[in-house]
Length: 253
Image 1 (cartoon, helix red, strand yellow):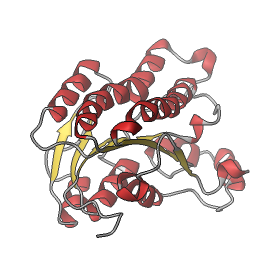
Image 2 (cartoon, rainbow, N blue to C red; image 1 turned 90 degrees about the vertical axis):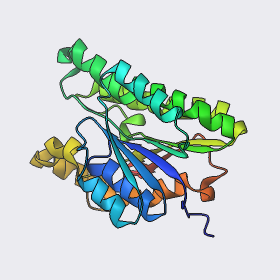
Image 3 (spheres, helix red, strand yellow; image 1 turned 30 degrees about the vertical axis):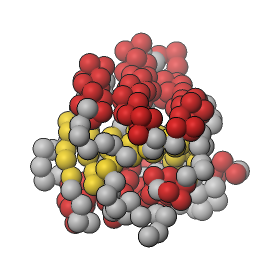
């Protein structure tokens, strides 16, 4: 059996409805995992991500959860942690972004971004991670960002949250690695998704971004597929607390 084979595993992917989350769910299914997709607006049936997973011959369950609602996230964690079939892989990909100059960045936007991008991630991981520790195995993958390393422009809440994700990845890895649980993160570069549409539509910003990327192109959601499967698999058994940039070489500049 290949070290990358995920047959028989159950993966939870948050923010799975589209973009990066959908690509991650599809990649995990193609590697053999059954998938529970979670998103605020995920269709109960017939979603694109469900079609992807079922086309790979795996089972799919849709759960709709608003990550901006702390009580809903706690309920989701209790539900998933209490099931007979345990979660083997947790991909914390749900996220949101609010753009405004720091001096005009509202408190409401700050709180929403921190809740969705950081607090909800910890709440869900704490619940599922506890059962992983008890079983002595499990994989947790966070979606970090280039703004886990840099400051960005007009996204102070997002930057603070993504720096927090990198720190949380290390903190959980320090505690959980001895129990057989791998906690790591993927930091996407400039990926062509809805979240970056404003940047893609700004000719000056888009040109400046492309000029700095050694690969010479925006990334696609599918560029994250291989790393997701790798970190979810036995091939990454000795990798703990790492944030892996997938950025076309951006940080190398």
